[in-house]
Length: 132
Image (cartoon, rainbow, N blue to C red; front, side, top):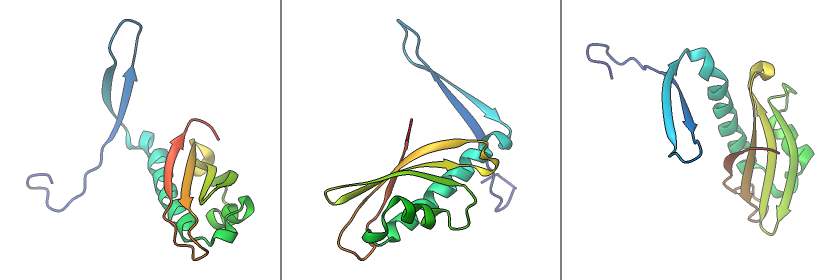
């Protein structure tokens, strides 16, 4: 809240850079950037939350590469590119590339959810990964 500003939301875009050089400790630098720099990351964050919700509500039998692709990107906007869906025991793991509009920024994510029965009630988690 800003004094005298009323109920106005203020957002800032910060870039945090971590550096590690031989024989030195990690150092960090924080710099403020224009909102345009953060917009793709903010968009991907929203898409990941949407993907978690959709994957969590899917029936276990629909958790296939094609099924997840259709659930995440029903209109073909290409915000999601599902690379793999793997079942190991009672856990499903989905690897997908999440893209901001205009494909300005891509980030690979691993979504994981339990497959309890067939009621589509497994809660999914999402973790960014370096590759799919």
